[in-house]
Image 1 (cartoon, rainbow, N blue to C red):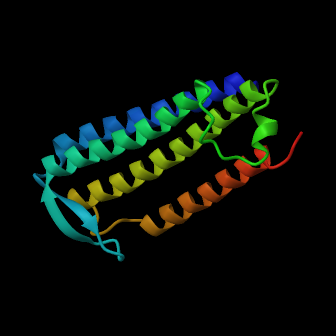
Image 2 (image 1 turned 90 degrees about the horizontal axis):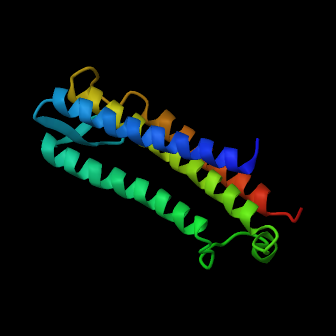
Image 3 (image 1 turned 45 degrees about the horizontal axis):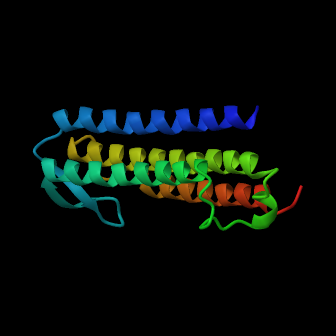
Length: 168
């Protein structure tokens, strides 16, 4: 698969997951009660409840910031802003003959991290919505989801280092 095709696939996945996250939230806004679980203890049980409107206000703010962060960094890389980029062998990878392919690969892998993060947020939100709707008494699999997300991050960092840690 070409680097451009990988980037388009990564961008499509990220966009789809963000749209799914927004649609999921809007759907649940209309079916959730006026007070929803807003915080969960280590056991996964809700230990704070609040107004649905306040929860969703902050939920959209935080997920919007998250999406803006990933798309903003992605855009900065597409514009060639590499001064803050910290990768092994930076001079080699950002040499004029390699910079286009390097930035394309970095943008793809960054969007993959963003997609994994959005998926984790979507999973946690869905578990919280289930508690607020009375379908569950606690988060069903928070610890498992968290461990899977951490493993994903470790694999992502490993892939990034494998990509840039050696000179071709």
